Length: 118
Image 1 (cartoon, rainbow, N blue to C red):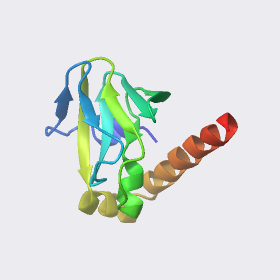
Image 2 (cartoon, rainbow, N blue to C red):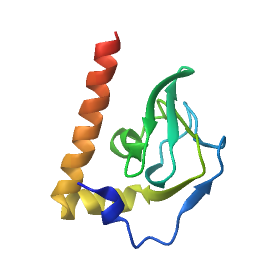
Image 3 (cartoon, rainbow, N blue to C red):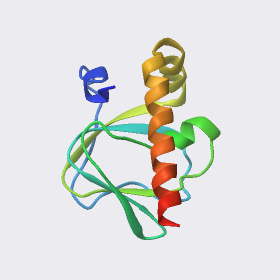
């Protein structure tokens, strides 16, 4: 699923300059974000685990379990993100099954990559 296409008409974007932090480990997980432009760095315990490119979602776990952030996301270049709150996330899951499957695939892929590093 191309999330950039799904959110292409969004006008409410969160812009970050290179080096700015979107969220940090331990922060409340009250928003998910879709990276619409730029590159972001995802790190856990100070170690880079992923470079997020356009169309990547970050913060998705907080939409599912309402726990604290497990990673830090920082803009590597100037970035624009679409913020997705819990209400919108739930609507998308209910009305766009491809979206729900995409989120599950992202979580599974990140878990598999973490397992491979252990």
